[in-house]
Image 1 (cartoon, rainbow, N blue to C red):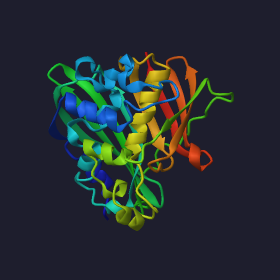
Image 2 (cartoon, rainbow, N blue to C red):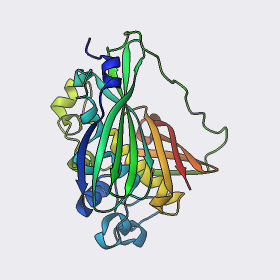
Image 3 (cartoon, one colour):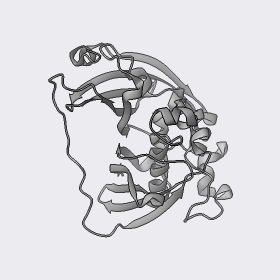
Image 4 (tube, rainbow, N blue to C red):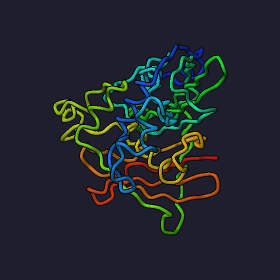
Length: 291
């Protein structure tokens, strides 16, 4: 059996060192669209608020940077955990949560502790939950929970796991905005550490069932959080407490993301769709909790 759920969830946590500096942060921010024009900013390259994403002397760190800090991802480490042996062609990124314990430093050295807290049996597929807890000498920094959907690996008799969906308010959104994805966005974003050729090589994309390369789901994840911070949270990244989403569909470079936002006490609910494809779902069950 390629997945041994009991072995995976009982294995000793694995630790690895992470390190990053301002160049990694700036590259990540550029990879999710920092410095590009938006409906709210016609001249963003020199906008003082936008320079907080791109200029080293004024830099702050968007919490979604946690998904690429150190150049690695929970996905890569988690799929090599004891009890897990799967075909990468059957793997999809199902969902992502980042919980922030304090502001992420621009330059950092930290230790990542990785584990598999759960493996769920969805019948025709399995869902592997990967957890990465990151701390430095001053204490916890962030926790990432990554849900990996593996086609064809269900039916082993395990727990089905949660299946609740987020109900959006039955009213018009408080804010709608759009973000254009550049044609070369995936080529830039992959320099932060996700080298999957699915996002760059047309031949590989065709083998995976797509007529052209698709954007990284975690790039859309970062683009969306930046939009929420900039439009609802006064550009203050330190107000983000946690950010969770479910990946509901693909994005192709060159498309436009349409985001609808609903404000609630202590959180923002978000719907993200592909404006060029009749609002096909992209991100669902998306919540930014904030102070």
